[in-house]
Image (cartoon, rainbow, N blue to C red; front, top):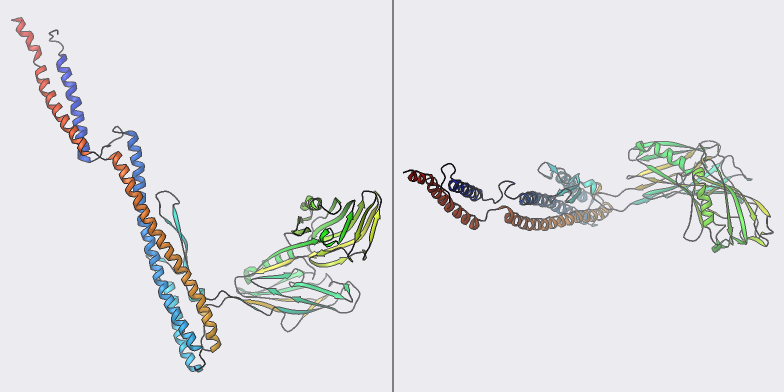
Length: 565
């Protein structure tokens, strides 16, 4: 080894090792002081990313646990209030059973009713005041809310709470009243005869089905066996009275379309609370092999005119042409009608019993006329075994030149034209969440003369608010209403109990995930004190050794002086 004064290599080496051991010593001290193995990205870049994701998960899950526990507390609050409401309903039921007994006088029942009134008020007070924090629970405003029970977005559990005022609880049954009304239609008519009598069945349910032309269903009329209709110049007035109020709608012509009735009723729905939905369906029976209405042997081409119409506007008609063989496959018939659906507003389909159904979804009248049959082969024949072609639907006008047992037989190219025509009107359904009445009347030129009651109504469900046990009959009805209310509360309480159990299970699962995720993060991020203290001791020893060696290395150049003497 050369002796040099200019460069002290040994000192440089000692300085480098001293700096390295000093850095290791500083790292060990930082890890031991912070308790973290990763204090910056340079310590472990990948480990830092993983530990940060785990930290987000753990923090989010801890919040989710608190959210779930809050949900449990809220459900317990609501369920506890419903317990008291249930107790009130049980007391009201006891009073109703007591009042229904024949030993009580009207005065006795009046005293019992006084307590019922107070209990009704307490039910409403509980519903209006029960809250969790500032959030009302039982007044219907809560609805359905999502509880965040996870660390990521949309990891939620939905909780629903209904309304529990006295007016919201009761029986689910509906009572139909005055389901029939008779009308005498007088004035102009388009068939021979004198007077025209008709009967209409007003079939109101939760939905009310009514014929578009008169706002009644199954409206038929006849004069001396002839099909007849009231003059189309007449107008029909519908007076609709609903929960929101009363208003009148006018339809042009007693044979107006279902679409017109729907539009007229919907225009006043804001005042009445009653809405309408129209639809027209016409079923063609004369291709139905099952009924043998028409039997075709060989090939034939059918041509007819079809259109959807109402008194205001009319869809452009279209010529429908199709060929069939032996009346077996009606697919060609359906396709032919659907090809012109844009022009007519009418679609076709096959029914389950193999008939062709024509439908106007808007509720326009379906008009079908001028059918022609052209036979395409020698020996083709068509037998009609019914008095006329068949049409299912509310037929306003029908006519045919076909007689019983008529048989056509022709060679190729022969044709037969028959005066077949029909206009089918649709059905209108009325819908309302509340009670409503519909009254039908008409102006001159086909006036409708109703009997003493020309309206029909449906009564809504009875509620706890309506209970009056001042009579024996009222007490009997109250028992059913209260049973319905108790069933409603029991169902809601069961739902809240299920939510509590679900949230409790969720909390247990979240806490388990937090524990395991925290353990995983700890293994990546936290300091292993056993390993790190050993590293610290090693770095301290190396630091001391490097310092000592550096001092000695710095003395080496002095040996050169001894050589100089």
